[in-house]
Length: 199
Ligand SMILES: N[C@@H](CCC(=O)N[C@@H](CS)C(=O)NCC(=O)O)C(=O)O
Image 1 (cartoon, rainbow, N blue to C red):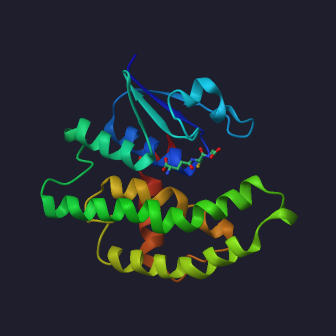
Image 2: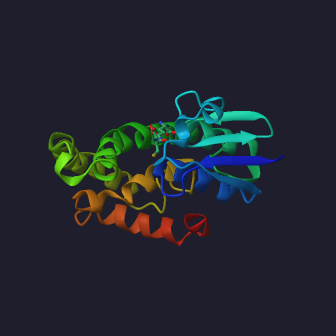
């Protein structure tokens, strides 16, 4: 059966997992779950992801959901892909920035994305959008300083990059200006240039 990624192509959380999968070089099958028509809440899908969200990885019967967990699983399964560094100190940094991607970045941009993509313009909760626009510059400043002098978040490419980049791609469309964050912009360009970005 091999690896199957249940995803929706345009979902940034799914893109995190897909980036990791593409970086391994291993074959995998993509199964589109149509979130717009509610396929994620079907009984069949909830049998593999009880919350009814994407992404989910099914690796020959080993089912993992939560994009961060999928990335960690892939890093363990494919050591030759070097998705995570070797020393505990370096791995600690990857865990930190991977979690930063899930909490600090997704924490603001996820709810903004829900308003932007799932609500009609006149029904959008402006407080959610305003809070994200106010708080994200702090988050971006921290990431920008971390990237100073580095090609990727912890130096070498890792799953931390896969966890942080997909939501940031949407930030300008949500009214968040990336202009002041030159290191973030340069790193996003490097991410877009990797073949995995287009998979
Ligand atoms: N923390 C989860 C978040 C997953 C998530 O919220 N996915 C969204 C798509 S970006 C989803 O499936 N939403 C559908 C729904 O909640 O009904 C992860 O990183 O995998």
